[in-house]
Length: 110
Ligand code: FES
Image (cartoon, rainbow, N blue to C red; front, side, top):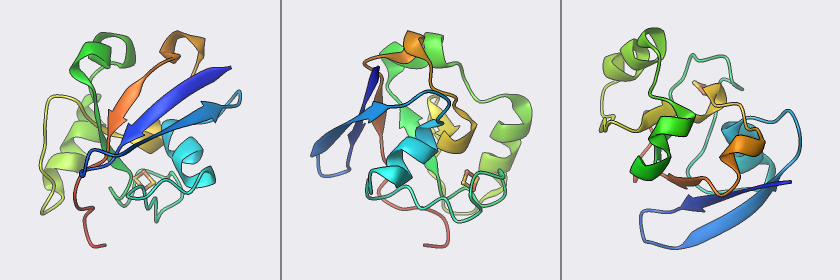
């Protein structure tokens, strides 16, 4: 069992329990976490699942690979940070138990 905490821009947080095989995006959508819209369903085409990995977790989660980073940079209105990731590209495993993720104030086009 893996617990993931999503922090909203207003500071409120929600901790969700991961089931095997889910991504960070699927866990958020399945638990109706605000701010993860995931309009393309995880196909890395929309950017509406953008999130910020907490700095202390970045080593374990990893920074966005070049293609993901390029997509994030190409989307207008996205505030990029070192921990910017598309949550649909982050596979959850036991090593990420306790992960903390911030939700951006706005998602592109939403
Ligand atoms: S759900 Fe569309 S890019 Fe992640």
